[in-house]
Image 1: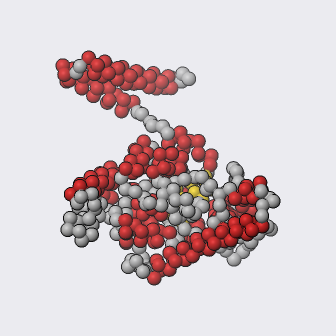
Image 2: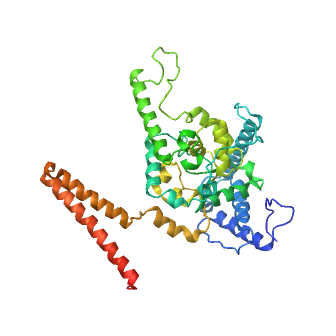
Image 3: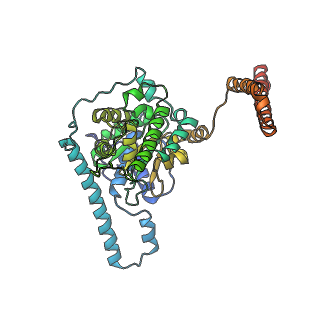
Length: 414
């Protein structure tokens, strides 16, 4: 029998193995440090993780990071200091609960002018929806995704609340695939924590893009960033035309519209969308449906929800790559990170920080370099000739090395 009463979403009590698992995880979170947990298949591991970790998060709402350690070091502190800290923690906990209750009330009553919850949400996903949700995060987030995420620092902002010191303590649930993240969020929905804690799942642009013209393209990332660059240039131009202000020259205070930027990105709409995203736990497909109904950018809506979220579900690559993490405004200090299937972490780190080159790519690059040198040799100065020759030698060497290793592998030579 478990040592505490868990918010178990079923009529029956948890089995002994589940109770032991939850007790051990709760105690580890309370103590701090690193814990490695495993449980046989079919024992409700996901639900045990959710119930124990989210119960701990709810119990510790408002507590200052490192407060327990500070209390241990100062056992003889004055009683009024302890009383003050307890009251402060209680106030913050109540404040977080009230904010979530207000958010839920705003959404359910439709005070933002959007649809009320419970209405059917539909979004035209691609025919290969399963493949879209089952994309392995490292593949989606290797070289290109790292570039796209890090470039966001100079484009759209996820909000002024990034790295907010008053942001709630968070649990980051990290998994390998987007389908596993969706499964996790659906499990959270089965518990009372679904509406008690602010939860958000992070997906890629391809999954959360609301603009039908962009979503239909193969290069969703490229087009999204292209629109972001145009919006940035338009903003700079309009500032100059209006004397450094974003308002019209006649002084009425109306913001100048941006025709070349994405019409689904609007800060006012993002604020409304945050309420819809955080009011209850939702999987990535549900978030995309909500964003489509609200006619607002789902990708940046999810990003804007991070500062206020208490539970964040995201793929390995978003958390393990520092530039990606920084561009999303994610700070791990004082927060909890739970890796699902942690035996895959090393492989995920290698994939996130590496790039695969194929012989066909190198051969094509070698031929193009030779053609470039042949065509522009007369125009190149001495320094450029040396550089192009060095590049040709390097690419040729890589091709020869791969061919040699391929032959050895086929002949059984190790």
